[in-house]
Image (cartoon, rainbow, N blue to C red; front, side, top):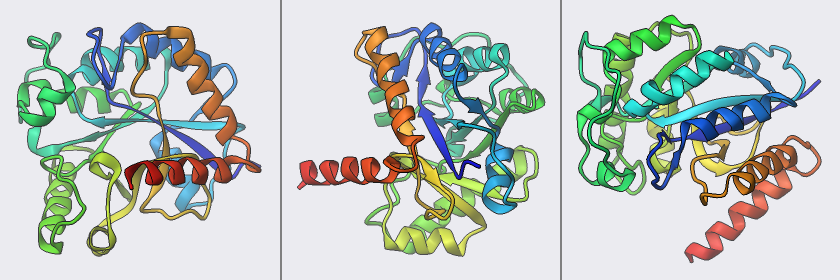
Length: 270
């Protein structure tokens, strides 16, 4: 019986060329290729595996989308419905408008870098679109702080406020859950932020450390496999993603490979 899950993560699904952006046709092709050999599970299934010891299907994978951009609704959501693949969106709640209006197009394109530097609410999902996606029973919405707040080298009070304020929004505007999850902006955290999240009502949190989640791993630093960027070569992109999932699906080498990659990243930063 498998005891690990490969958690995939993307950001933008959009036809425009940009960093951290996958065109819709390639997003669909990636998911279709993965589904040939792996079993996509829902967010609830993943939580049941963690907290209720639910048995996993063969070769389980789980999809996450970070930040809560409007293009997740316009471009990713139709693909997920078409392929019947579930996902969770970790949304920056302070950028979500309360609205009854469901949109069918995105305003004039802004790059990922522009949105990070000057966030604009109209480029993020609103409450009506959240309800629409949740009604499909494929999409869940969770917290990514209120302002894409970097939870490292900050005081406890600031971090705790970001965590709890965003969770309050999630509890108010999405369906109720027994267990609430969180995603660290930029994937970074420290001892202070870990204390803050453990003092809050979150039960687990996702990082950006590359790797699979193994039963028994730290629940507040869940590893994921990045699928966010590509070099404009479709075959190279698909081969890279499938290769990483294959490696991390092997219990014998998964943790070793993940630790090796994390070590190399740390050495480059020194």
